[in-house]
Length: 128
Length: 136
Ligand SMILES: Nc1ncnc2c1ncn2[C@@H]1O[C@H](COP(=O)(O)OP(=O)(O)OP(=O)(O)O)[C@@H](O)[C@H]1O
Ligand SMILES: [Mg+2]
Image 1 (cartoon, rainbow over the protein chains, first blue to last red):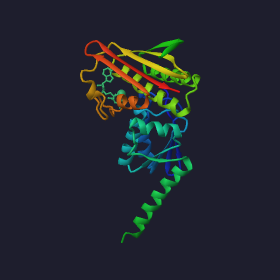
Image 2: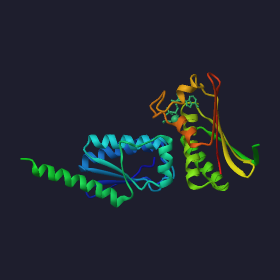
Image 3: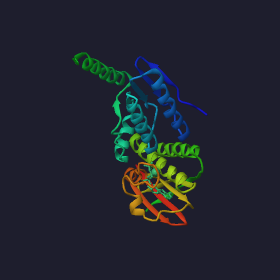
Image 4: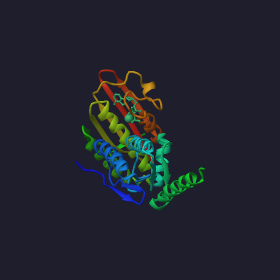
């Protein structure tokens, strides 16, 4: 069975979703990702969906699940690179992806994660 | 009057791979009649929702893909059909957020919003037929 590779990029993990994914691959991805967060201590997860031509409720649910599980493991998920036509369609479909942060591209997504880590670091430093 | 323009495809929906193939075929037909990118994305997304329902709840079935003409406008019309358990309460099934399984309950209601035409017929114990269309 195909698996989606998970790359480490600094404090974050990067997942690039290239093609149509099926149930089995989505489930495998959720499992692989949670393992990887636990072993690497990653604080952020970037999911690049720039090559996805559609996002339906199935993929949407997968993105929401990944974000929810990652959050429990103290990692923030940012979905990056959504095509404009996909964004318009998702809203009409009724899928707000409310639990998921989004960014235009990988660089900006990385910045979001670094800013969060920076803010956390400052909080800790200021604590008496 | 709406007239089919000849070439039409019937594709069976029995596996997750079939759902992918249906998406690809709908995309290429939408492109062929000159639907813009956003409209293509909408009809392909609606097709994906309905194909998945056909597979998950209808126990498999098929889709007929037609190109139709109405005056100067062309459209893609998709007819999803299965001989599954049917839907007892269509109004409930069409509600945003209603799912009898573990879904988000957005497939049917979302497919209606993403289409220019939408009709659903379902008889418990007999099956379900859903027709959608998107026009240029
Ligand atoms: N072809 C079908 N045959 C029988 N029941 C169906 C069929 N299509 C939909 N249903 C019923 O209608 C309900 C609503 O469908 P809908 O696609 O809106 O939501 P879902 O599939 O449960 O979740 P989602 O599509 O958001 O992942 C389904 O849960 C199912 O009970
Ligand atoms: Mg559905």
